[in-house]
Image 1: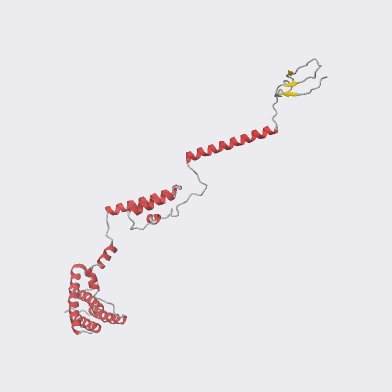
Image 2: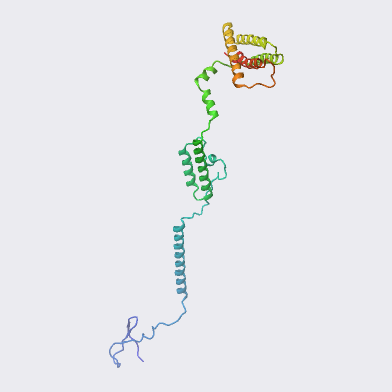
Length: 284
């Protein structure tokens, strides 16, 4: 039996040094470990190896899932988790109120409102459809109005009332006290009732004369000037009788409940009383 005094080896070879006097007097290289380090063929994995391969598989699956999500985002666009904004006026019937603009808005304002709302609610198709529908209705209505213009009564009345002639006429009138308005109204209502209820063959000559005197009295009572009262009363009487005659001939048809030979004069007198009441009450 030999003893080992030293050992030098590579992963596959070892060197044994035999003492002097032995048959082997020099260092021999013996390949004694060639059979001891042969791998064992087995299909059983160590726990460390199983843990390693499990982690590798998990990382590969996570990478695969990430690649699939990126591909879906590239195909369909980003899909945020936040809820999609819905147009709050989607059920409003008036197209102008639906877009939030006035009826006097210009085409640029209409187009700007439409573009802003479409960008804001682009993710909700019913909202975009409602905005587009309101925009189309407004454009079609404006096109129809240009093809078939209509008269704006309020605009015409406003323009007439702001004209210089009307302003000059209105400047000649003023509102008196309520008691004075009641007094003149009672006087001319009585004259009208007498003219209508008691027509004569000569016509309402007496009632018309009384209306002229009443006009002079009321104007003098307000203005405290006899000359102005006479001039205003005479001018108002002539103007009222001419306007009443023109209206009865050209505008107002015959009134059924006013009959008789003097129905024309009676109706003209009633119109004259109304104009004389305005002159005696409001003329300044």
